[in-house]
Image (cartoon, rainbow, N blue to C red):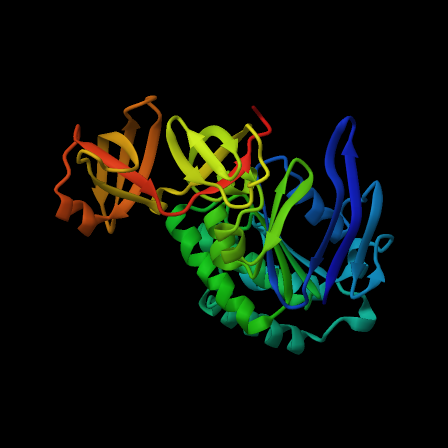
Length: 355
């Protein structure tokens, strides 16, 4: 089912939770609503579900205005951060619950319910836990049961609010890969809320970046990561180095070091800021006449495939983070305290409106 929201606005007293938000969620795709706490992503999810009403705007389900529909009529499945399983019911009974409370006319018989529940338990790879109770399960198992329960009523839309937020990093990584595989099998239109950029980029077909009740950028994971539309998006999607300076006729002068700034040829003596990700910096030993930014290596963290370098600029003391392959770090034989030179391979410049 395709979902569309048009001009959704929601206030909480003087606080604007959502400010004229319009979005499309393609049928059969997995969309991540990504952003910091308080940006409006959970409010938007709850309005799509029918758990909250917008002050203005429309929710369209397959082109039909569902704004006035009750949550039950929208055929939505939910998975929340804290499982919300019934502790006094077995795993089997938890999954069967939604089927058993259906109106009598559409309620399946006991044999059909049993078959459906066992199919779902196999789907989430936990059929051996049917007779256990939620407190006997691990967090990851409980979340998979919560997902099976949401799928039992054959929802047209699956909504997940920080589904893995309460789990430790290792389990979270396993579950998000599992969710992606499950989605590829089922193709139910899904929207999930997260503040974890790695999670959104790994799992989603489409990422919606939100900030202060507005949409900052929409696109495929590679698009939003490689071509951020704003300084906020750049800063939110991973670590970044900032180079502040004067922007004039397509050149950013950041403390005597100049960078090309394509797209800013019209700029006249403006304040600009260049964004460079740590892995987009070339690092070499300093030699007289070298071009680039002269730095001191303050600390090196070389564990695993990548070496993280904390570098201090000679001219203004700014700290820069660079990431290089560990093989490169070993080949250079770098030592803390050495003088190095760094050059951005790629730098994106924005006009600095904050200055």
